[in-house]
Every structure is written in C-alpha cells, then in structure tokens.
Amino acid sequence: MPIATPEVYNEMLDRAKAGKFAYPAINVTSTQTLHAALRGFAEAESDGIIQMSTGGAEFLGGQYNKDMVTGSVALAEFAHIVAEKYPVTVALHTDHCPKGKLDGYVRPLLEVSAARVAKGLNPLFQSHMWDGSAETLADNLAIGQELLAKAAAAKIILEVEITPTGGEEDGVSHEINDNLYTTVEDALRTAEALGLGEKGRYLLAASFGNVHGVYKPGNVVLRPELLKDLQEGVAAKYGKASPFDFVFHGGSGSTAEEIATALENGVVKMNLDTDTQYAFTRPVVDHMFRNYDAVLKVDGEVGTKSLYDPRTWGKAAEAGMAARVTEACANLRSTGTKIK
Image (cartoon, rainbow, N blue to C red; front, side, top):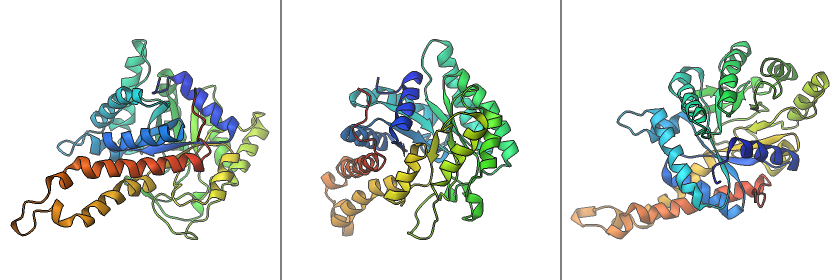
C-alpha cells in the first residue's frame, strides 16, 4: 500500500499531529524527481507527501500543449505503479492552485477521483490545495466551502491557504509585509465557514511570515509561535483542543528552532521545493563543468557519449535530491516513523 488510501492518509496526519512531527511535502516535476522523493523517504524510513504545482503539472503535460490535468494524472498513475517498489507510504497532493486555474486543474482532478470512487476505487490524489490568498477572505472561504464538499465526497482532503505567503510561486506573488500574519479573527472565520472536520477534513496553510523561494537569514521574520494563538483562539470558542492541522509553506532556509516551534503548534506538513530543486540541479552543474569537453562537441570533436548520456548525470541528480529529502525528514522528526 505505498500510495495511501483515504483511511491511511488520515491516520498518517493523526500520527504526525500526536507525535509532533510533520511530513515533508516534496514538489516533483518528472518521473526522475518522483523517484528521488520516494528514495529519500525510503532511506529515511519515513512516509511522506509528493505534490505537483500548477506549473509542475503544466511542465509534466509537455511543452506542446502544456495540459495540467494530463500531466498530473499521468505522473499520479505512474506513481501508483512505481511506488510499490518503495517500503514507505506516500500521499499524492496538488500544490498551490489560484482561482483562475481551478477550472483547468483542481476541479477536473476532483471529478477524476469522484469517478474512481463511484466505481469502488480509491481517489487518484489524496489531497488538493486551494490557494485563495489573493482573494478577499470572504470569497476565499466561499470557494473553499464548495471545494471542501466536493473533496469530502471523493474521500479527499482539502488544503486551504487563507492569508498570503510572501514571495512568488507559479505566478502567484505577494509582497513581504505585515499581511503575512494570520490573525485569530481569520482563523475563527475559517472555522465558521469550513467547520472543524464535520464538513470534511482540511489542512490549513496559515501565515506566520512565510515567504516562498530563497532568502537570506534576517530578510524574513517568521513567528511560528503565532500558530499556538490560532489554535487556542479557536479552541476557546469551539471547545476542541488544537483544532487545526497546519501546513508550513515557504520553509526553505528556516532555522531548526523555527521548525521545532511550528511542529509543537500543530504543523503536520511542510512544503519543500526550492531546496530540492537546487539539490537536484547542483550535481548536474558539477558534472557539466567537470566534463565540459566531453558533454559538448567542441571544435568539431565528438564528445564522450557515456558522459553526455542523461542517465549518467541523471543518477547524480536523483541522489542529490534524495539526500535533501532525507535531511528534511530528520528536520521534521519524521525519520523512522513510517507506518509498518
């Protein structure tokens, strides 16, 4: 059961929250980066989450027509087959999807899974993300209600982002300012609109200063202790302790202390993309620089086939990314926690 069933995915998230660890959610854009993520999880003996953004899905769809649904469905089906060879359980997730891309991505994928469930099968994806951070909170939550109902009917968990994450990812960008901090009032409005599980389970990407992309220490002020305020503020009204399952976005470059505080306050999923992109690319760059004359037919020479063969540098890329995934598992305390 390498691809989690709906029941097992719920168990994974429950175990993470109770154990105060989180699953790395690794963005993939190819069969090779998928294998790298699976390998990293296996070497860490950690279950995990593999995800595709709209840009990643478009890339997977091929540059001839760039169809996001085709690309994401194809890699998801591939994952269902190859993941059988890895001794861990993973969930498949789609990352940031803004309003303008819902009809070309998340809504069709929900229909794909709904059709599977109607036939007695499990959904193709285990969760989808709705990123309404560019909308007013009222509009964000109204769309969230619609998507949550459809997701619950297809045995899928919805992830929602209610306030902005700074930086840019796949065309969605926000300034780095005081709007990057979710308030207790925002959390209360979310609980009122989406419920606390009775309308369907959802993951909450709250903002505590998070920024996508690469940044140097001191450029971003993270306040993961804010998550405790959100938990307690909603718990006080609804009488449910630690009501939210939080997602940590923009985690690249975070300190060990910031990550630990986030885990203590209910983070069960942390996205990694920037760091794993670099970990995949860096060995390729090293190979090309060290073998410049071999990978290029310089001055009429023929090069060295064994060194420009994509399998040669591709293996190094996979190993580099897998190592970064394993490191993420250690940082998030998920190492050795796989479901037996």
